[in-house]
Image (cartoon, rainbow, N blue to C red; front, side):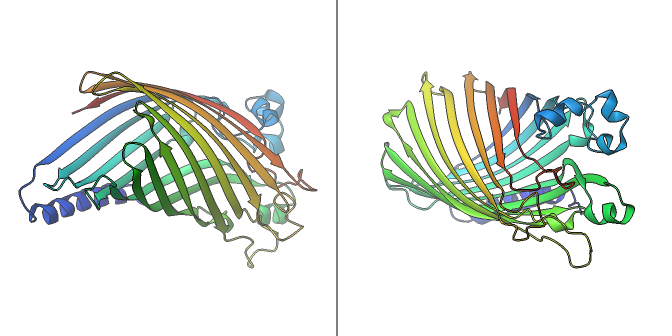
Length: 368
C-alpha cells in the first residue's frame, strides 16, 4: 500500500505555520526565514545491492532467454547515474535569553537515468528547541520522515510458486514513515557533546509481500570531542535496533520468510575544518553493523541462523563559495558479508546477501 505523496509536505507547511503563530505571541525577538536548493549527481555501481554473480546476470543474453533467471531482474543495468534535486525551507528564531527555535522542511527526488523503476522521493521535517541557554546547553530535536514508495528488487512469491509449481517473482516495494527524538547535551563547553536518540520506522510492503511489514525501532548515542576548538571534531557512536516483521501468514500454505532481525552498530568519525566564517570541512566516517536474523523456523532456510556484517566507509568534502553557494563531494564504500546457514540456496534466496557497493556524489547548493 502506498502513502499519498502530498501528506508530509502538507504537514511541513501546517506545522511551520502553527509554530510561527504560537511563538510570535511570546514577544518581539527577530525571526529569520531561509531556503536552500541543491542539485546532486550520484553514481551508484550497485543500485539493488546484488551479489557479484547476479550483477553479471543483469543484461546477459543467456539469462534473458531463461525465464527463471530473467524474472530476477526488472532493472536494465546494475549501476546507474542518479540526479537528485532537493529543496529546504527553514524558520529560525532566537530569543533574548539565547535560546533558539528552528523548524525545517525538506523534499528530495531521486531520478535514475536508466532504471526509472528505482525513482523515489523523500520528505522530512525537523524541529529543534534549545531547552537551556547556559554554557551547558541542552537541545531537543524531533524528526519525521516519509518515503511514499521505494523499489527494493524482485522477490520470490512463496504461495504463488507453490500453486504454479515453479518460481514466481514480483516486485518488492514498500512505503515508510519514521519518527525520532534526540537530546543533545553540552557536557564540557567547546570540548565535549553527547547526543542520545530513540526512533521508530514503519515499513508497509505492497502485495504480495505483506509478511515483510514491520517496525524498525531502536536507540543510539554519540559523543563528539573537539580537541582543537571547532577545527577538529572526533566522533564515536553506538546504535541498537530491532526490525519486527509480521512473518509467515496463516492464510497461506507455503512458508513465507521472516526477515525480523536485531542490529547493533559502532561508528567512528572525524571532521577537519579550515578557513574563517563559513568554513570548509572534510568528514570521514567508519561504521560496522552486525545483524542477527530472528527466524525460529528451520524450514526458513534463508533466514534461520543467519548473521550479516555490514561495513561502511565514507569521506565527504564541503566547501562554501561566499555566503550563498557551496560545493560538496563524497565517496562511500560498503560491503555486506552474509553468514548463512544450511539451505542458503533455497528458492527464496532473492534477498540481499553478499554484496559490494560504491557510491560517488557531487553537489552544488544555493542558500538564500
